Image (tube, rainbow, N blue to C red; front, side, top):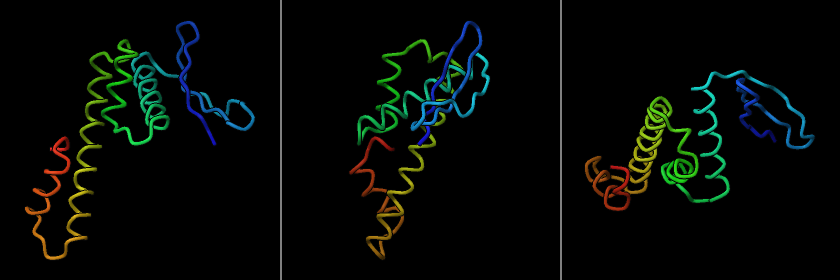
Length: 123
C-alpha cells in the first residue's frame, strides 16, 4: 500500500508517496502553492472518507473545510466544487441505470423520479 501526503518545507511544497510497509518515500512531486492546497484538501477528503465509512464526498468536503478553511481559497473551491458536481452526476447516473436494470420495462423518466425520491440530495 501507498500513502499520499503533502509536505511544506519553508516555501517549497511537495506531494509525497510513502510506502506503508517501509515508511520510505517512493516519489516526491514539487507543487506550487495552489496545487499544494488542492492536493492537501484532496488527500484530507479521501482520508476522511476512508476513516468514516459511508460518508459522502460532500460530507467529507464539508468536514475538511471546517477544520482547514485555509485550504479553500477561490481556486481550490472551484476545483473542489467541480469534482463534487462530477461525483454527484456519476452517482445519480449510476443509480438511475441500476434502477432501470432492476425494474425491466420502466422508463427513464420513471427511474429518475424513483431515484429522486430516495436521493433528493443528488438532484
